[in-house]
Structure formats: C-alpha cells, structure tokens
Length: 353
Image 1 (cartoon, rainbow, N blue to C red):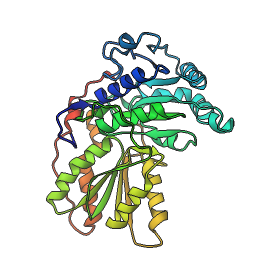
Image 2 (image 1 turned 90 degrees about the horizontal axis):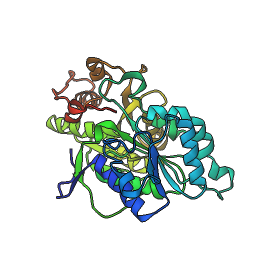
Image 3 (image 1 turned 135 degrees about the vertical axis):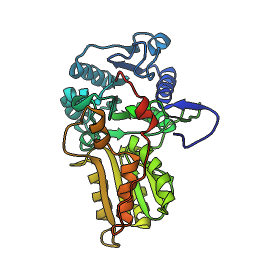
Image 4 (image 1 turned 45 degrees about the vertical axis):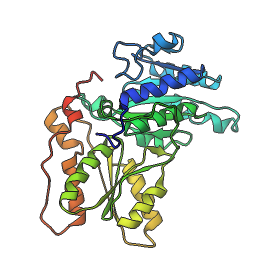
C-alpha cells in the first residue's frame, strides 16, 4: 500500500537500509552490530552488504549473547560512538532488559545530563508465519513505560527512513520497532537525507464520524477498513502516531474533539497497552468538556498462536476493524462485517524471521 504515488518507490526495508547507509557515510561514528547483519539476506535487506561498503569494523555479526552485546553497544555509545544494535526479533530484547532499562535509559539522568547514550535498538515485532508464542510478540508498551527511552514504530517507508535518521542522530537511546508485515510495502521515499520530527503524528485520512489510531501495521489494516466504511457512509479519520514516546497526543485529542469517538487498534495485547494509554489520555483531556466514546482493539490475554486459523482470529484485520467501527457508530443496528481477502503482505510472507 502506498500513500504517495511519486516516481521513486522503495520498500520499507530498502528505506531503512538507505537511512542507515546515508548516516554511515555522513558520520564515521555510526556502526551496526547484531546477529545476522552480514548474512546474504542482510536482515530482510536492511543491512545488506553494509559490511562490504563500510568494512567489517562498522557492520558485523555478533554471538548469541544479547545481554553482553547490548553492554558493548552501551559502552560504545558512552564513549562517543553511535551504535545501531539489531535484534531480528524483539522477543530477544527481553534477555537484556537490565542493560536497556537500568543502564541505557538512565545514564543521562544519573550523570546530570553530562553523559549521553546515542544508541538505536532495532527490533522486529508482530505476527510472522506461524512462529507462535515466543517469536511473534510486540513489547512497545514495555519501552514506553520507561523514562529515558524514545520509542518509534513507523508504518510507511518514507517515515521509516526519516525516523531511522532521527533515531541515529538522537543523543540518547531510541527503540526502533519494525513490523515484519511492513518490509515489502512500497511508497515514494525522497533520495535526500532527512530526519523526521520527533513526537509528531500524521493524519492520513480526514473524517468526521470517528477517529481510528493504528499502531504500526494496524495503520495499514485500518486504511483498508476505511475503504469499506466509506461504502456504508462512515467517515473515519485515520491517524498514524509514528512516535509512541514522545506521543503526539495533541493531534489525537484534536481529532477526537471533532469526531467524538475513538478506536485505537494495536498490534499487541490490550492489557496495560498503548491503546489503554492513548484512550486514558484522551479521556483525561476531554471528559470535562464533551461526551466521548473510546474503545480498543488488540490481542486477547493469551500467547500468540501458531496455526493459521488461530492467527486469523487472534490478530486484528480490516474486516474486524470495520465491523468494530460500524458497531460503535450504529450500536442498535444489525451486525455488519465486510468480506475482505487476507492482506497480500501476510499471505506472501515466508520469513525466515
């Protein structure tokens, strides 16, 4: 799916690669380390041949020792370098939470602003191809909960490039989350080097009946739902937050103030999730001035399933999103659910990650 039809088209993965490559060319302190970054597929194309272009001292494979390797990256950042630590699955970041939460996130505060940790932590999130409970997770709410961490989950290729450059240039740690189903999606990406604005959301479709905030791949699925909602006369405003911390709550509140209804569609669990946080902040801002209706969609309180039939029930999709919105707008009408084919990127994805 593209939101821009200009000539130069890159996939999401190619946009991340271009951002890293441009920053490595512009700044000798930038380097990449992670499991499989120099393999023939180059981390789904995002690190392809960086070790050939910039040398093995600036892009290199590491052992299966996540905690220790993140310690190396933090030490390098404290010494003035700008490491990009790649975790092909965000699930493996759990093995180095002490390094991330107690060292990387807090060093700037603990040293009175005199020490910086310019570190980017990349992690792939979300459903894969039947990889189940331990390899299909998304933990952005964990990271949002931690002072000292910035968290970004771009949806489109142009934002993926701009957000990566902004993350690399930031003087303190950024957790950069990439949904697997986004790597193949194309759109126009400017060839110039550019950094996106931290904490700035994008309104992708304007509407008057309801505000839909999607997280990562759920933005794409919400845009697909939008087409079906238009067919039944529902005008939905679609917002992509891009940055989860700092969060552009002002843009979301302004939209809900107009529409009166909010649905947050997350690619993670509902309990204590980003949907809960966004809904609560909106309620706190608007409850004294107008009547609003807020709801959430996301994972039920169970581990991620493996089989395809269960995956199709577990993860939000355009049909489920459209049906949920219809019920919010028309609570007393008969249920409606459009027939929607499986999203192309999901049907075609084969990993290995």
